[in-house]
Image (tube, rainbow, N blue to C red):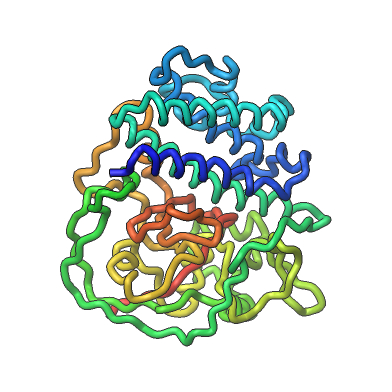
Length: 388
């Protein structure tokens, strides 16, 4: 069990890291919402603060007074049971509260949270505090990828700063890792923190398969493009093909061709495509089509988890062939926190691993990320699999 001191340190370090991610921004960058899936940085700062105020301070710290009576309306995300909220598409329309006021709100809540943990702590609150901390860590990743989308769709191509392994170079030769047909155990069983959707641990039978030791490279993807992959209807799901046609998709996100050379926007500016780097910012639709083109398939999330100790992972979220569904005997938590994961278990695909944007202490082999199949603004990639 985490000690009070360890929890306080983890909480404070997490709060500081969120604000450090925003240091390179100009004030104008904080309010932009170019698409529905990309929230303004200012909103992330406020929402992660509201979470602690809503679920811990209000009701557990004596005489706590909310910073502002309307901030719950402004910064609630999707918790229907708690009350009304600003529609997701309208987050970028909020010129107020100002950036400075949001930072004052953060400081106010952080100070009172420290008081709660240090002086009025109840160990029954540990699960909620852990969810709050890891919720903010989730938003740190979203914050960075949202910033990339905001800056990467600006014609000036602004530089944010250097992110280690944003362009992930891997010169290892791919190998097929064989996995026998048998019953495997999957899911989280340890005492450390996990989300409810990673449990309960259970058994699953997998037929024999093999999975690649490496991620697909940009060089392979250029071959896919040059072979007409984006124009071959036979490679795509019907929904994926409609998506390609309606949106004129012809390359991964942030790629553009100039003078017969593929280039990309990175947080460190424009750079040429390194063919040995891992493909990034592709949708599930594209990942599926590429696998079809290679005469292979994506692994299921269970195949990925069963084999993950045999390969390196963690630089990219990896699309799987699994729909995001509850595990056998899954129990949704009581109360508003039951809205955290369970109600999203429809029409989404599971991604496994983590990425260069995933913060420290937030990576597990059982972690189940999930997104709609058309989305690709996260650091997404794929590795191939095939049955044997």
